[in-house]
Image (cartoon, rainbow, N blue to C red; front, side):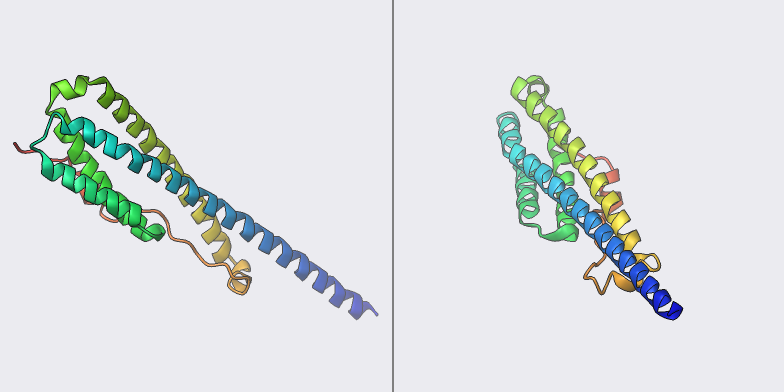
Length: 185
């Protein structure tokens, strides 16, 4: 009789463990999905601001068509990106193109004083700050989910329960975003 109670106790403890593990993994997965959604909302906001910013700069720097072309292409690539890795690569290209656009804007004092340009630039800076915060939130959620999936004894059950590790939203080419943009006239 004692052996039956011991077996029942082990089954109950194992069931509670699986229940708690599953619910914990689901909670972390939902947080990561929410964080990814936040990133995509902010990236969309930034991509919607860019055409207005380009139009403001175009009036002052019409001969800088190469910069406008690069920003437009980078924006299109960012809009068409799918998944974390592709989106991160497209965003890195886009950030480089934006640096070039702002470097061109710096060369035109009248543009820097233009109220419309200043407002767009401030909105873009605000959006960039929100993107960085969203990335940190996403990467923190991915860290927590991946850790929970990999630690023992969760690693024995996570795969069976359908949970897989997620990719971090990372900068692939650090050198390209650390060096200042050169503008030559």
